[in-house]
Image: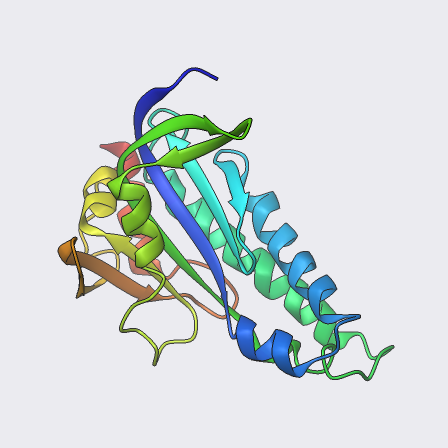
Length: 213
């Protein structure tokens, strides 16, 4: 792999409640449950995105500019990933073949998705492809935010919203600001993810208009 700099979208899909789940449930089934949920999400993210890494309870995916066309299609991809997560979760809940704590605690888990658009460096570390750069750091930092009162949500940075070509008001997005050391204020937009993963009418309209632009 040649070292190169690219612009694109950085996506992290992170399972909420992971730490409590793995520390209070059986080792035999807990990791299997997390793996199944993450695999369901990955199948919907890629393609069009490229899975960069699985980071414990999170999937890190990237889409260089031109991989998601039109850019607003990304919203359907993210909604699809969340819907796949919920569908897999419901199937596990409905399976009463095992009464262990892990299998009976699946409902406590949820998914949050962060998307940022920026610049990153592709390079090799120990023979493996890695991404580096301030925007990569920022995307990961956004997983630790002030939205602890929300269970499942989509967080888009202002840069991502601009790349998507969205009107935040029509897309049912609420303005939100996070502040990080060395990175300063980061303006974002948030919306709760629907239980069934289907996009609200305002979001669907915003997608249609952005795609037509």
